[in-house]
Image 1: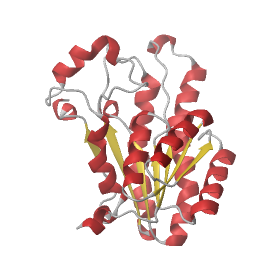
Image 2: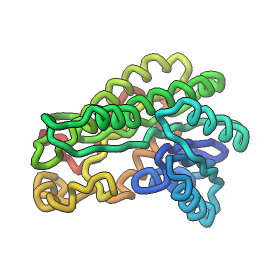
Image 3: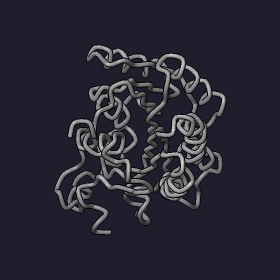
Length: 255
């Protein structure tokens, strides 16, 4: 049974892996035996997180990367293979948002959010899949959001570019699952609900309102991701692909 979740000698890249959900996923996979590569635009933050992982005995590489730039992605992949030899798992977790009313939403902010959240996931998946196809195995996990499943009241979350990008990421997941299945690469997405991370600053003003709508009666905690990430990263999910799994305490079931 343990072999279904065994990740020893496998290498996982986690974009945006220096904080919040990304740091939690990096820690979980590292504790399961994987070599970890974390990357983000903030190298100092990545280095600090890498030190925490190394203190746990995890093999880790921290690198700078703007996921909207192909040359940055290629650099990360090259360094990861140079150090660890393979790339077995990719988690497209890098994300950004911008809050503004739709009628006043700036074009440049729309472009920025879509570049990071959607284009970045496409580019990183494409580059990594080339390596995974040579190996004849691989796992790609996209981080969508429960906000992708329906429209959101502007009083709660006025972030149309973020919500749109996360919805498009679901379609990208299904497309990649089909395109990459012949290479034994499984592509799935998780759709977290409301977790207390830096990007969900909306929680500060609407915590009671949000919690009241969640059947489980609470916000997500970082360790609520551990089980699903282990499942989708290991051999237990070899026949699971193209799926979108909500981790939201039942919130999406009420939509």
